[in-house]
Image (cartoon, rainbow, N blue to C red; front, side, top):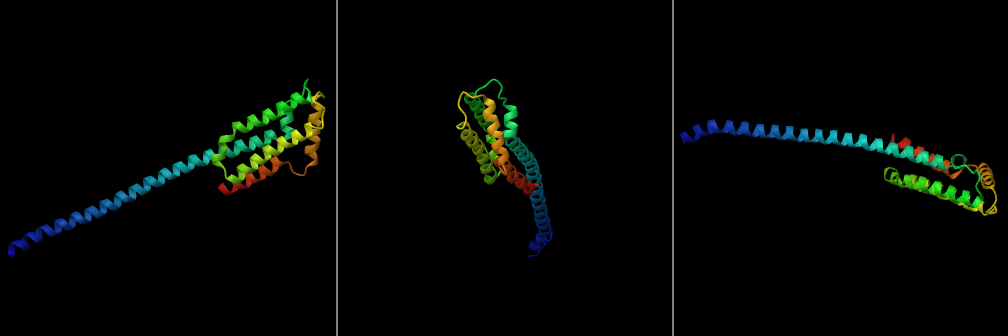
Length: 173
């Protein structure tokens, strides 16, 4: 019995030290893992925010570029007839849109729907106004009709989409 007490006298403190060491190392390792995880999330969030901001910039640029006043300056009507100019305008809008398709993964569905709606509305307005012009008329006739129609509108669809885009961006920041 005395031998057992002697063994316990030396073994118990050793076991206690081992348990305390285990608990401390376990806590340290857990805290270290949480710190690494936090740093990784923070870095990922920073990168993600940068990509989101880039998407907002690209989509706002897209909306500005398909606004008729900008579009008609970028796609000049010189020496073309309405039929050719109509095709060039539609092609320009569609290629801009296709170039920015991937940005939809960085914005909300609401913003993306507004962007698509603005694109479709712009195409629709141009398609509607082209029917009011003879196909072989000078392209400047279509350009004039599009500009005057745009000025008659209170808010062009691209402006509405930009408003929604800016509001969401403010929430993100």
